[in-house]
Length: 92
Image 1: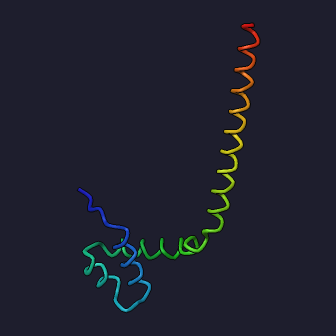
Image 2 (image 1 turned 135 degrees about the vertical axis):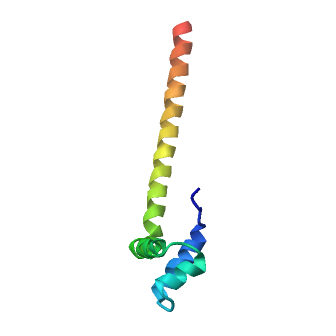
Image 3 (image 1 turned 120 degrees about the horizontal axis):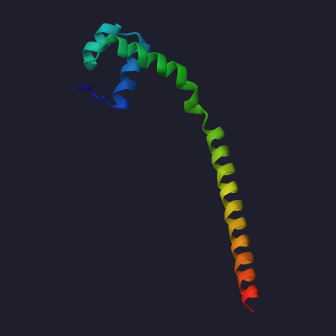
């Protein structure tokens, strides 16, 4: 069975590897994982570190999505009112 490792532990191990105060083997022994895992986590941290500071793009995307949702709700309301009016006028 595979061991599930908490993301916080992965981050600490990757930061330890970046600091360079301990060898990869020492860090692996400290966290009781294979040294290749430490190397992978370090690489992943370096590759994705810029995304930590890129929240403005996410906020803009969320605002755009919310505006689209609001516009769709407005359109649904208009179509519902029009449908109800047509039903009433066809019955009369």
